Amino acid sequence: FSGVPDGIWQTNQKALARLAEAQTTLEPVRMWISASDPAERCGLCFVCSWMTGAGTPLSVVQVPEEIEQADQIIHYRSTREIPAEQFGALVQYEQPLSAIQRKVYANIWSDLAHENAPLRAVVNGDLLSVPEDFYDFALRANMPEGDFRIGVLIGKTLGKMPGAGDRWLFRRIQTMLQRGELIPVAPSTDDHPYSEIIRQNTEKAG
Image 1: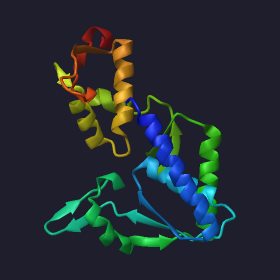
Image 2: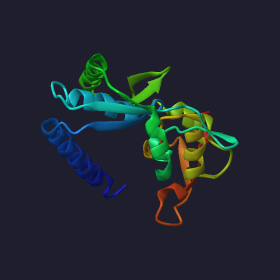
Image 3: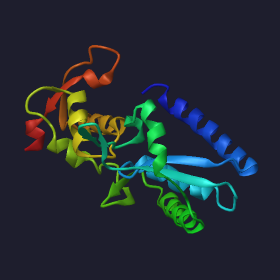
Image 4: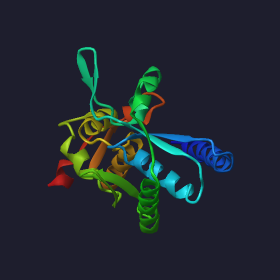
């Protein structure tokens, strides 16, 4: 989306400046991680690599896969799904990172950076480099029959594939449209491109 890359870049630069400051002040750094979110796993590994040799205390709050609340069980696929008022209760899961953990995670980041893949995913619990079309099979498996909104396809796929981001799936849908695998039916009716209506190209699929 227009302006998003610049916004992400600026946010990352501010985060790096704070981490650099913590290397000097030794201010503790706490990271929040959902095991099924590859971006958050990458963040953990990157920070451990960035802090190599620093005495800055590092800790991680790994959000449980299941959390019981009242009469229900909640599954958080990403910390982005956690309401702000719930974070305080999750601090109980905070654990300091040992020296060996920091070294292992830093080495994982070194390997990922060397591979320089376009995408990372959590596969069988492991953080791996994968090709950019890794989630395409899930998009195809969740395509409704007839005409449908892009947002519907993204929502169904996200429900079945923890770790996939909506923006990445949208990018892959745009690639499928460019290849003719999907056909545009009606443009978006508001400012959000997810409202565009499309359908499968049965001739292309055949």
